[in-house]
Image (cartoon, rainbow, N blue to C red):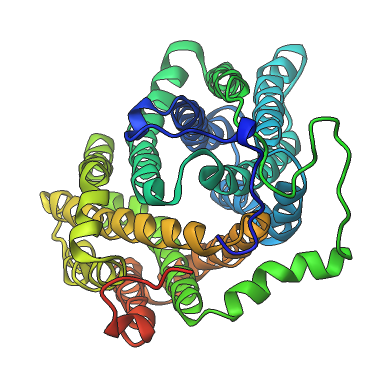
Length: 428
């Protein structure tokens, strides 16, 4: 890998032929899975507390979602520098412990007095910042834990975990609220983050090149401004990465527009009950999990560049099932449209992320990953506002139609790019 220093023989990670026998990857995978589960529980518990306990308005609840995502816009680039300078394992453990403390503080505050809405805003914002740092760190950690030829397989397993958390997290969050109450359900979030921290602590893989050594002595650094822009400069110098970045950002913008409308559309336009809404989401998550299990083999068969193009372009017509679904049984069609997007997301993310990790020098991984997160996740709050504005002006069905067409249009950035002539993305 370009710019990568060789580790001393005694510190080398001897990787087994199968990732399932790589204890370092298994610990990272377990920690990331439980951490994702905790984050998905939060997405249900926070709005339920705001709605049922604090009697917040719809706008105030929407602000909670925005506050959770805004740190990706403002904190991603500094997080990349931290991930490159520090031991990523310790960084992830610290993020988990911090999120655990934040989540468990909510029932404590509620027990000693009245829980104010402003405190919930503080909790989701601070937790969002730690989630940004955790996301950047574990992406930079992957190439340290596994060899380049296993990156696609490892990324596929992490994507499967994400879909598993998407499937089980909201249901578990709702169950916790029913069993122990809205505020005490935050203890479940805290427990998930604690388990993640303990799991990651036992991974003793050496720190990445460029991180602080075991004594914590920092190595010589470039000026801060230069370090912030190095990740963006690396991306600008590679047309394939630029095409992937534009595709991802456009897709995320319109995906969040769709997500901001989905539940309201199913309830008001399709007359769906709450269990129907849950079933539609479950269809998507189950399909995503299945695709994740075969993603690495599928990408090897198709080729990385071709897999990215096909994943973005082919499922697009099925997205139209969502805005065109009729009332009543239409929630099934809506679920099928979501499932088509899950196929897209899993295959695309595995191919694109593993490629980015393979070609990025190890000392730049944190900053390059942070640059992607800054742009790709930074547009998410804007996409949610766009979807809500469209619905207010033109109605739910028209707004959803425009948004799913926007999701599909993201394919143009990779179909009409240097990737269109490739079977596999170039290795560096």
